Length: 248
Image 1 (cartoon, rainbow, N blue to C red):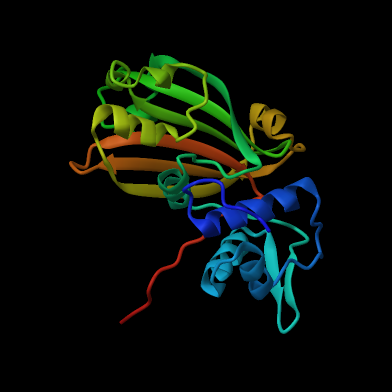
Image 2: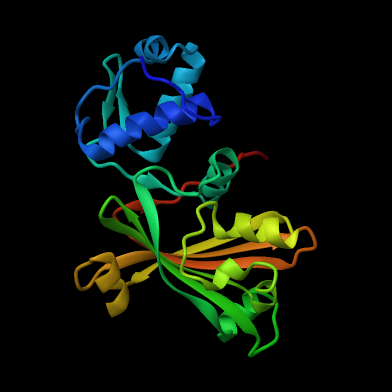
């Protein structure tokens, strides 16, 4: 019988176990995964807990249901990305990336803020900012190239921002813990465009290649920008989903 090894929510550990089996190839596209009832018995948990674990993997695109025929590993796993998922994962597990996904820090240091960055962070032209650039891989496959920008005044409080060591809990969680400022709201803007030569090289794309570009700003309780992230995703591996009410 599988065993729980930490204080993480049980459904998260169950989902992590199944995800690892999928990423290792133990469960291949088209394979049926254990039913909610079987998972509940194997892990000695309630059916709702097992359901929550499978729902998490369905939402990530690893699983797909067939009406009246069970749940199967998806043939073309997709990653549905909402920035809120990373923040929630950081709060629940202390790590911002799920198993099978990791960041490679390409550079980290202080630079003079480009105009767009200074505007987004509400800084004066030419202000010093932190530039933290990373390549995110899922297994061996690049799935995101991003740059996080922070006000350079944060460095004395959060010196790891300018090192190339990975910040496993996420840069925003680290900045919150070290500065005392708290993120309140995030605003995202996305658009499609052609990848640059460098982006094609790092993301292992053909020429030409379309990408999705995301502009992500986090503000604190006083509406002061805390972080700007500019990210680029291969067009065929990422989706961004929104759910909102409709009313009159």
